[in-house]
Length: 149
Image 1: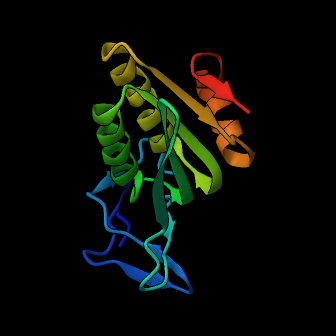
Image 2: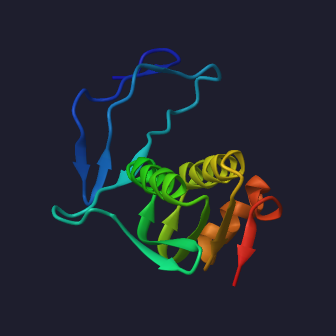
């Protein structure tokens, strides 16, 4: 389905051996190279991809996160952190159980940091490892967010 400098993607998601090809609007390629498709890892049915638990540690509410923080799950983490900051402005996000951490996750942490500051509280992150550490380094958030051990 290629035309000069353009590509079309199927209207419905297509399973490609465990990878899902999601539909996108018409893409155009100025240099007329072969188009790249965006693929996302599909999760098995019943696996929510993200698990969140809140634990009170003195004046701090710890939000423990496990699973994948990506475009599909970032809104869930955002809602959990916003709710936690409304309960108490002293919140710590524990990322020890995170397997994947995308740019959307970094945006959620930056937003939580700002919300906590507006509430005259403190937001910190602990258990940063692997991809999460790399994303926070690349975005510069590792120098902005308070990191606890």
